[in-house]
Length: 498
Image: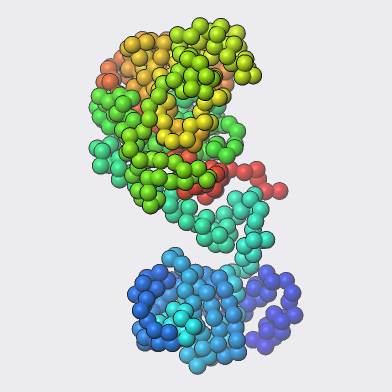
């Protein structure tokens, strides 16, 4: 060991130093990466169990704990280690007289970031710190790379996203967001199960593009020698299951859209889509409220939350308002689908919005809403009565066939859900698919394709159905108070590292 110690003392590069310590263990016949270690206690549980332990008292109770070394202070014949486990951090109070000569020497090789396990007695220091006084020490994983310093070494956002593992170690609040996200998803599943929905899985590789207006990722299937799309939505397959007799279905899973990235968009994202036979758009409003409130109760203290400094009230029955009503409130005059197209076009131009001559009243009204209104909405609002031109899969309103039985749920200026009374007339669906094909041929890369099999399924008869899609990542942003979608995705998409 003496020769190795000389090498270590003369080494200035910390990674080289740590590698030397690793090699020294191997040369001594010890593994720096053993296969198994079983902890019997965790930090928060110990804090609760020994909350009444007096300062300076030693219990004699033996426990085994394991975790990552987050702080380390040596003082002659004693040493203090802050050990981070899955529940938090607990102090280890090492004393030379409590350890074997071997373990005391091993302690000298421990670095910040190492993962260790100890067995010892529970005590409280004279300064009031609950501690474990180790009698045995085991190296569980020698860290060869030092942890970044919190405020300077890992403050760059790009670095944090690329090295998410280090971000989670150094910034415990990041780890907490991902734990909350996991609990939120579990709460959604429990709620859906309680409402009688069956969770299903539909193809990710699809040969017909449909279910949404979006640009797809394309891949090649070698065995079939044909191109497939990564799915942009689960809608059309889920509704096939409704045709087949599954009265309530949902899928919580990944979608893929070959589009830009910003604060609320990532090319790969998670949604929940659900469909209810004999339901409608009103059924979906109640379902949306139920899902959000179930998730909120799981990870928030109240239905009144704060998102990026703005108070949001998720309690009660949420507001429903037509697109025309909301646009009227913002532009200061009453407008609707009945407003002449020329007047709507003029209002668009008054607000310096680009429009096309071919747009009818529905598209012009939607443009006003999309550009001027959505960002002004704070509390949960079901925005209803979308024009049929922008809703190729929604059922027309019986009272006005220019509009559809559709809503989008908007909170804090962002869309969180999209829902329809689903179109179940196969002839009407044929016509809308044909219109989408024409739009694609005219250059619209986001238009859907004609799905012949889906039309055939509708021809067998689909009952009246309500359907909804909810953005799970955006829900996590809202309930975890995160401004960017990247902060609720463990591994957001980025350019490859140089």
